[in-house]
Every structure is written in structure tokens, then in C-alpha cells.
Length: 441
Image (cartoon, rainbow, N blue to C red; front, side):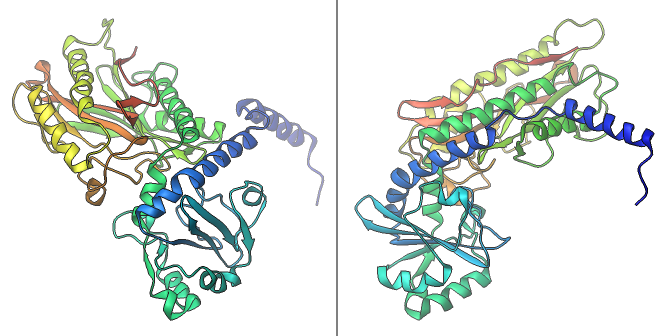
């Protein structure tokens, strides 16, 4: 191969140096720090959450089957591990509060050094392993509604039935409630990790909705979205929902979302997004107003609509306690909103009156932006039947529609979304909840 010309080599070296400066490196030992905290989460959940989840689901053995290059949605939760061909994570009740943990097939440093498994062995041992323990009900990840609990493919199910034989193959049952309980009952180390992730999501969203990123008349919505994506890349983070939703709302609803639309003075602009850190995926929103020339603060009508949206939180919070199903909780929430004078509406169906209308979607968060567990939403009907419990993390998400005089009484939709947790005394927030309308000059 011919030698590279000296000028081209200098240019290449200069570009390499520039990239090294432009992309800040993560701190030393960051990968290990993240692994250590995830390891602690796993240990605490296996010891304190999993036994009760299996007991409450009346499941004696839980088998999570994986293939090379085709992992289960719970792969991160269970400790990862490298799989050649087929592998199984097998959990067996071995006494009150005691669950034996075996990795048959999965291997590797992160799994083997985590201390989470009692037994390691080849996948070929599965049938013998199951016969020796003689479980009456074997949970596998099949679910009609919850993707997280539906990792078992059609072909893998057939393989399991064939491998286990007729007797034990007939004992396979859905583990969807077990999966939901295992994930949604949070331990302290998870709350710490989630709080860190959510704090980063809020911090970056608020930076994106500022003059650091947006110059009115010049910056497009997609440029602001790509700025957020670059920050994720710098910090070794994932995105909960692919491209961040950076959008403008006007009298007739959403004007544009993460596209070439250029931000203009007078716009009301929002960000809806989440970051993924240490297997924790967040979902938050923030709102800003873009000042017009001569304005020093948002118009009174816009500010009042935002303030009314924030006050909705106080009407809903008293309805959220452990012990009721999500569906029952939604009825209490609706009654509380009506009593406080708000209209309770379907999403994006505001009433033509002078009231502030509210639509909400209190979905679970945690290991996914929309996770499993009790859900005060219309699109997760099975999860409406689940009971709220202590340390259930969810998105405190709602939309408040208030009339704007300058818009002929049409209503501005103000989205409020923060991450919260159900505790014995009610709701607490996992980061600083939104309380101010941001301003872009």
C-alpha cells in the first residue's frame, strides 16, 4: 500500500485530536461503578423480592430461556451472560423465602462474578435438573399483553416442551404476574439508580430548552433533538424512546415534532424523552416559552395555564396510596379532579368551556420507559387490575388543557411528567418535580 502523503497524515492526526477534545471521556472506573450497582440491585431483588413474587404466583420453578443473539427482555435484570446456542436461567423454590438460582448455559465474567447464582452448568442438564426438583407449576415468559413478560418464542416453547418431556412440558404456565411483581417491587439500590438516571434526563432536557441550544429563528426542533442524542453518546447512555420528542404546541394542537420546523418567538415548546442508565429507563417532560421581541416574561395567559397545570398535581396526589387496584385508584383520581373543578377528559379531547381539563396516563417506569406493574392508564388494561404496592415507581404524567384568551378561548395543552414512587404515606418524587415554566430568549 503506498505511503500516506505527509499533509494528509497531518490532517488526519489533527482531526483525531479534535475529536478527542470534542467528545469528553467518561470517568475512570465508570463501567465498573455501573456494574457494581446493578449487581447490588440483582442480589437484593433475588433475595427479597423474587421469593414472594414466586409464592404469590404459585410458581415452583421459573425458567427464562434465551438463545445466542436473541435474549429475553429480562436479560439485563438477570445478570446478562454469554450464551452459545441455548441457555436457561432457572429459579426454584427450595423452602420458605428461599429460591435457588441456576444458570444453565449462560456464562461469562459479569454473570459469574456477580454472586447472584448458586449453580452454573451446561444447558444440556436442564431436563435432569427439572426432574430432580419435580416442580408442579413451571413459569415461563408468555403474556398476551405485557411484552416484558413475553420473551419466550413459539419455537423455544416447543423446544422446552420437547426437552422437558410430556410430564413437565404440561406444567408450563404463564409467569406474567411473577415478572410484573419481580420488576415493580423496587429495592433501595434500584431507587438510587433510577434517581440518577431521571436527574440526568431532567438536567439535559432543561439545557436543551435554553439558549445554550436554541436560538429563535435559527434552531430547528430536530437540531435540538440531535443535541440531546449527542449528549447521550457522550455519557454512555441509551434513549428510552428512540428520538427525543421536541415539539411545539399551538391553538390547534401539536404543530411539529423533532423535524425541520424552526423555533419561533411566541412558541410553546416541550420535550418528552428518557435516558437509559444501568438498566433504568426514564420518562420525563419539560415545557418552555420562547419570548417575543420586547417581552421579558411569558404572557400572563401562558403562565397562568402552566400554573394551573402544576396545581393539578395537588388534587391527584391524595388518591395514590398502596392497597387499591390501579382501576380503583383511577376512579378515586377522577372523583378528586372533578371535585377540584377540573374537567376529566379522554386524551386530546378538551371541552369547549372555560375550565382546565385533565387527561392522565400514570404508567409504570423503571427498567423500561413504559414498564410492568400497576398502571393507571387506558392502554394497559391487564395492569389496571394489579394492586398498588409500596415502592412502585410510576410516571406522574398528565396533560392540563386551559383556555387562552389570545387564541379565542382555544386550549393550550400543558404536559407535566415526572417520576414518582408510591410509599406508605403516599407519593414521593424521585427527582425534583417540575415547578417552573422555562424561558428561551
